[in-house]
Image (cartoon, rainbow, N blue to C red; front, side, top):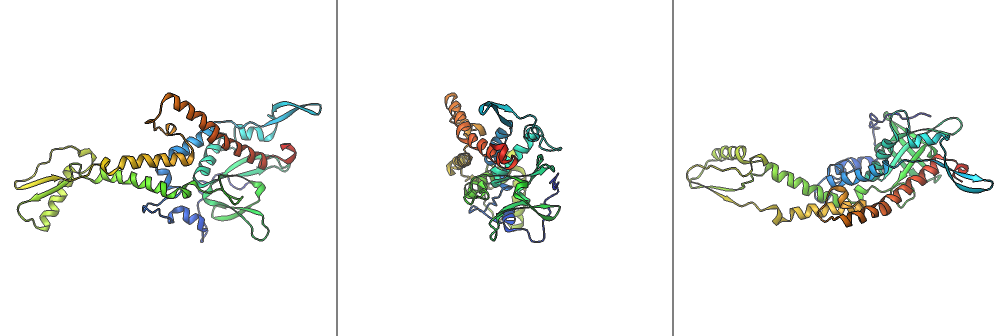
Length: 336
């Protein structure tokens, strides 16, 4: 069955979308008051950078299908199974629209943001895999049927809910405890991400809206409300904004300007931003130097951190992908 080839227009939902989708679209606020979900969190540079590192690192590694090389009854190494229908799908082109790297990169990005990556498995009449097509996590869900206790998949195809058999879906979940789906890292770290986004928004507002010579203007004579509004408007037009920093302020006779702005470093603004970057990097187990934070980096510790990144971050992901592809795309006989 050929269900989905291009999901770019597949976000049309039924009249009553599930609660998990509404929640992910922005109903939840962090305690900072910032909306944190899988979309908004990508606007936070630390989150985007970590996901980009993980997705591109995994996608750059080729997936090669091998078979055991046997001499008699004994195994003597492995050969590339280049004649197997799945070989070219995994290594070069999963379908007619995208190369293998794009499928892996996008699915890994989905896993790192939502906790789950999905692709539809299309088979021929002999049961051989002939293509893998992306299924966006935003319109795809998996659950365990309470009556039959079977795992069920559903997705949205042009506004219609479609059920998929588990054999039709390559589902690679992240960490999760129910044996069905992975947890969203964004939701699990919502408060940490929200604090980082709030600090970033505060910095943008400070430089975008604050008069950088900022302070209080005092007049000897009392001003009418209309005069105050006119003066305030004129002052902001001349001195507010980053591009007008450090300018000379000219005031009329009888007025006095007093600077009262608190420097950002006294409010621990920069420290807060750095700490939140470290929090996000630790959540994804990405070394800081890989997201362009070199403040504490040396040639020696970068080398060791890079090795640890391969061993303790990427190796578990490689193993996870390998086992789920073997489990879903190969028969029991082929896996042996």
